[in-house]
View 1 (tube, rainbow, N blue to C red):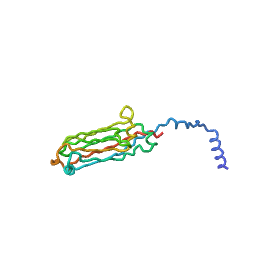
View 2: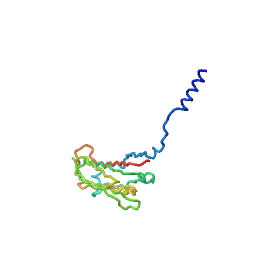
View 3: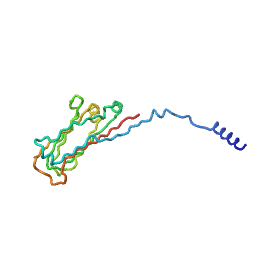
View 4: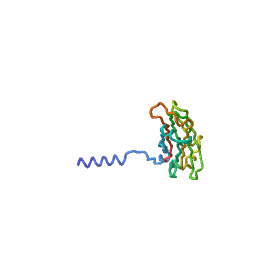
Length: 179
């Protein structure tokens, strides 16, 4: 009997309890814009390899660039940046060119780096795309990235630093509108 009275009481409390009307329209006001980060390329060339190459051009490589291949990603990117880090511990003055190419092989944009022989500081460059910076369409239309490196020094000198090399790293960050 006591159990039935307890259930009746709980039922009456639930029936006459107060609650606010649920507002499911808050979803429309929600904005989700995460930032994604990824490596684009990493290249390291030892000085001994540079010394074996005749001529000034010691490295040329085309990299496939599929970041904007999917429309769902390409249409939702709000802005982005590419950070380049270049380190030269060789005895060579170097020149690096990075070209962004569309599917027809046309150059959409170019980044140029020149660095003295070691000892030099780490060179860091951030290139922003979207907004008032470079057009995001450059990256949207890029299908390949071409990296070329030239030795402006000689082919005989050797740095006295341990493991002398040229290292180039790049990291891309994109802010994407999910909702």
